[in-house]
Image (cartoon, rainbow, N blue to C red; front, side):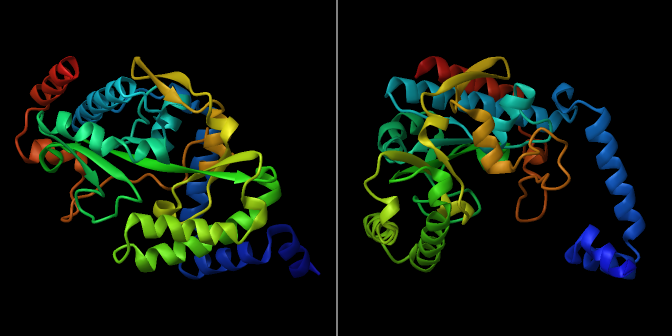
Length: 319
């Protein structure tokens, strides 16, 4: 009975995991990490953390901030909607700026605006040495997944990602169609991964529409759902359109940028209910092929980031 009660209390999977850790001699380390995590979240306020003291990382963050300001100005100029996304949205909500250990910039846009930014922005950015295009500096992701904007990224690390958000006209509210949505996304992602390099965007969009139309409740309804870039995440992240629009503005590093109307709901969908806690895992840094961090690119290439940041400030004034 003792074993049965223990399994009931802790769960079978947890018991197996605990047994495996014990067999590997890692149970003590796990207990120490659990204790540290408990004390951090019980007695420390994550919202009071200061900016990073790592000068390389902080200079990269400030360079990325200038790139964001340029993007923001161009979006306002062309009446395009976007908002801070993922870790940068969390940073705005939790820290009023960058998460202290963050080293990139992510924003999101409705698909119809996303499809316009390369033709609208390219010439103006090109003349200032800022490159906009599909994918990333070390990958060949297609235009359907994300657009990258970079300024001397290989030497400075200055980069931002733009992700597309699709609208689904559901006949029911999100919680009522979650099962069908998960199935449709799974089918679509499987198709996309096999055909991304073979088909045009038009073919991919047509197939997406076809796969989603199999589920009657996801078509031609009165409820607008916003699906967050399954091509990139390969998962179902979705919120109600009213959670995003109308957009609000939130402070970020002393400036104000667009954020979703219901930022807590958006963050909870993406990160889960504990987004205001110290992270237990998932603190990642962008790496070069040789394993070096992006934040050290400038110092490794003898780049004066103060001058580069000032250059981007001048570009902001010029556009």
